[in-house]
Amino acid sequence: MTEENRRSAILQRQDPQISDRFAQEKVTILGCGGLDSNVAMMLARAGVGELVLYDDDQIEYSNLNRQNYSFSEVGQSKVYTCKKRLDSTLPYIKVEAYSQRVTPDNLEVISQQSRLFIEAFDNQESKRMVLDYFMEQEDKYLISAFGLSGLGSLSDIQVKYYNNICLIGDFKTTVDQGPYLPYVSVMASLEALEALKWIKNGGYYGNK
Image (cartoon, rainbow, N blue to C red; front, side, top):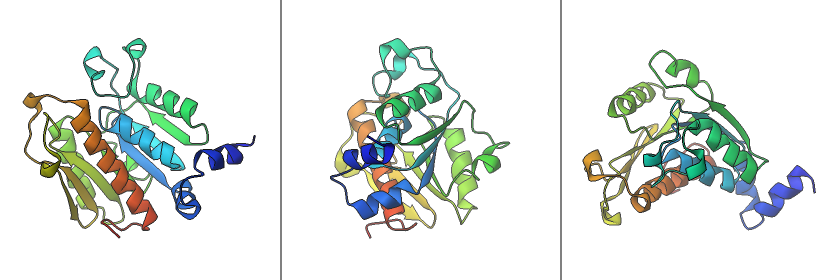
């Protein structure tokens, strides 16, 4: 079976025209932790053609309660392990992986990778840096998550649109409430959903 035939078999229950749009898009994911390790797999399973991953952390035991890694992978690079898992699950996806921390010095270069970016840093300073940068980049689009700790309610989660920025979260829970996979997964699913809608709608945020 050819690569194209395998891809068609996997995606046969999706709308072919939408799948073709997904296949032509390249998405850059900033971080491979609790949100983005799951977002990456969701986008790959939907048929997004190319993913670019950035993360300089190693897998720790404390990550395993919510991140898409296994016990045997502790100590390994998050970004390369994420790429390996994507490659083995859906080999028709092109994945680039960079073990780099996103900083003010390299963010401009990173921003040339694609049109659509997904951010899910734990560090608030890094999150603010990326948000501030993309607010000035009208031809780029950023999806970012805020407030995803604890065992919150779905009714608290909001999706907000500001020009080229999409913000998802409850905007109130704090890290001391602890991360739990069910709540983190909801946020990850919404980030992936907004990314797929953006691609489907040709760069438009919202329920079109």
